[in-house]
Image (cartoon, rainbow, N blue to C red; front, side):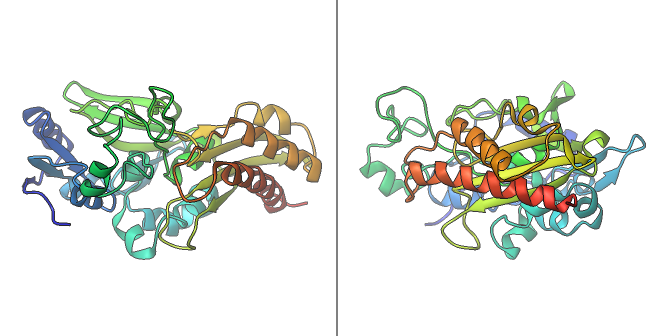
Length: 330
């Protein structure tokens, strides 16, 4: 599958990149690492006239500690850099662990945190070649009017499959978005819509430029668990991130995030209330697993059955809670 013809634009600043997006609205795509976008272009999912290559915007490649104790991560920081950062591994370990599960070392060297946050949703009917999709009559996400995942409804159920967003949600991360009218900063939890075909709140003229980890989330111990068919390369078919703090043998705060089983990464509501003030044991960890499984809505978007993937959310949540409690010291 060959790439369509396009003109490559190489800005050296965020302002220049935004200008390109405004000038070529409706016929432009943004390239960060390219690990997901380039294969999608080969599959004719996108055929833009212009591609804005952000790799020359070097100001977005840093991990910086701020005066207030928070951390700023440029959107072009590679997944490999996050995985290997001694500071992040010590103080925000769930993010480093999640980053280390993304694809393969070669792809982690190219892929970026901004790209992982903005990763396109996918399913068996959408993420295929043009010939394959044409044979299926296309889908509601691209060129058609039917969701093959849930044919009885009008909603696109393509699943979000990024590994780092559930960890970032657990850490209460915020993102900076740059556009023609300046920048805005929003909680990552407000960025996703829950719709497979319109999955993020990002205008065509806007870019995700930075990620912020608050000082208040520093030193939570964290664990990420991921289900995939192969032990490398594959996207998650179910992913669970857990962070918690303990005091005097009891959980003082905790959060659980899930991915790959809904059209958006989600925080598990009620997880903190369930775990806080209690000592972690098998029964409590199992209750946390039940809570996570309850909000998981995997449909037929992969070779594995929805029932199996929901059960693995339950199992991985239980294991991750127990492991995070052990990391804190029993």
